[in-house]
Length: 145
Image (cartoon, rainbow, N blue to C red; front, side, top):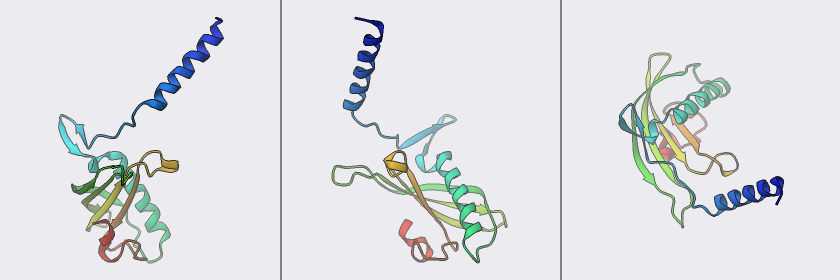
């Protein structure tokens, strides 16, 4: 058998074993500097919230031009794992954000598994109290609490 045929067969076998492997799931907790923290405190999600908040205050009329300086008291208050009946894992989180104008606001956010672009990765929905001018998440961010 030629070298090219062997390489193609090996690649096909590797791809086939990946397709048959069970789906892996993200850990519920992360280890950060020797201690466990909730996935709600994952820097990827917080950076996404910070970036989208800047976009929100820049594009929604009558919102003050502020940015999120810091996240405090990050906590998870509800978790629904992926099941056969409900294939999307949902993690409800809360925090207090310190804004660039010196005020503190409540932040509520939802991390949804397998809801990223074309079903790859996670999606994050968030609401900062007082910044939901169009009531997307109902009054006082009630939908994400």
